[in-house]
Length: 114
Length: 114
Image (cartoon, rainbow over all chains, first blue to last red; front, side, top):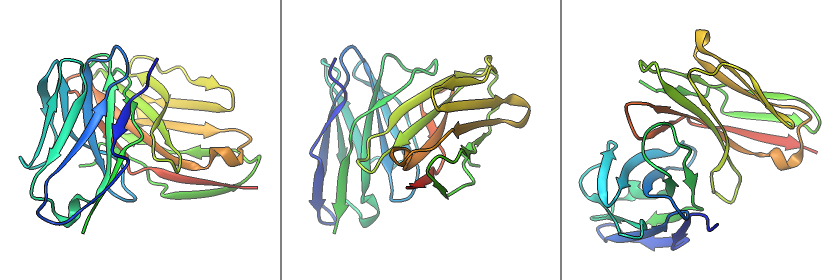
């Protein structure tokens, strides 16, 4: 069974640029959630995708967008990067949304915005 | 308002001591789920336990035990005979039945000193 994988591991961008982060869900999981974890903080929910559609969104501006593909892998896109976007971005997959299904997390992508 | 509160920011114990990590949650749902995750320095969140709101039985898994008390909205985590490998940041999280996101606390950084 393959776990959740994310790419790239680290990324450095400058303010105003755009970035795409990628996630492959665990085998058999059809739901992917994205979280932002600032240094010293807990993960904050960005959004969730279920069967290729956005299925809930946290308090993040529209410049944070995503996609889910038929194979359930997912992308997180961030436009017009700001310094405060520097964080660890975590992807989590689960069997289905709701019902308290445990989420399995990937190793994260560390984004630094200069 | 914070849905999950982990008041202990940092804890240091000497190896073999017992340690309890506190978690207090807030929800209006009658059905909800509570989780504990471990985040070692590598960054990946590791699932430890899930508990639903209808099951208040305490659980023990090896050196780990969890005390769930609905009356005080707490879900505390105890590590018995701590080991250096237990050093990590531990997060408590809440998932409500009506939603699809996890609400994480700010984490407790545990350092076990040899």
